[in-house]
Length: 451
Image (cartoon, rainbow, N blue to C red; front, side):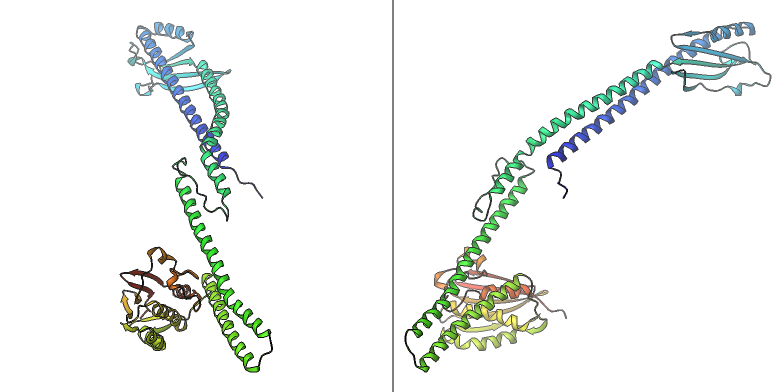
């Protein structure tokens, strides 16, 4: 397996590469500027020589004087300058044959030259030989310019290599210092474990670039701590819930075996044990249902359900229990949803049973059905003791009980609301709860079926 490149190495490579490219580009641009300066300098000197030669040619008034002057020019070589000139006096030559001065560069025997050449009629010089033309060439030795440019380029490359080495060391040091807060965050993160989830990363010395990451890690640790705490509570609760029926079974069995019993007594004992087994079976079934829902394994059927009709049928089933608690149940509104009839009946039954258990005697329980755009809402309201606000987000957790006064663990496992949320979530809906002014309200929101 290839070992990943460290962030320090990446930053060093990035810094040094970028700096080296900038330095190379600067050297290249500077070299171009120097070369352009040399060209302008050479052009100025060549034009100056050309103007001087034209002045000399203008003094020649006869062909012989002109030829003598051209001979002198052809032997002229001073200060890296060489001049050659040829006169043509053909009758077919015309002033149109004249050309503007042309600047070229050429090499010979390891030397470089800049040449200014052109063909000029004597009338433009001026001279008194209108039918003559002069082919004039001025060569300037620029070898010293090339030597300087070569030296400059070697100096630039040497400086680039030296700068690359220095920049690598400085970039490595800067990257190490800059990433020191990240190493501290990593060191603190390694201390976090299942038993030390209360550790938090300090924000005071964290640079601005790492602040969002550190805040996200702290938020993640907060969620993990809460999740582990709820898991720990769940483990304790489930152990308590399972221990009660198991203890009952053991005690009853021990009592039955303590002495001989009549067949009727054994039948009573087995009937009592059967109730405990049924309680265990329901609890295990509920836990398996929630586990499947958590893993997305609950796939509800899709059929059109009239909520008003279904809720009234549920109310008929709970009327004896409501009568014992002296509460009245009413339903308002009507709507249809697409879902699994058995699952939704179970969810609504859990909410109604919960409302009856915690309703104030001689109060009303309302089930209100409303339609909002593309959604259907079902509210279950009961009057009774308010649930503290800090408990509301956890009411749908397994075995969670907000208040000892609402603790009915001897009859209920504390999984009803968790199952209800799992069913609604499997249908793509949402469930929420509020408790204010002596009224607790559970609200289910689901999508309305397509027409």
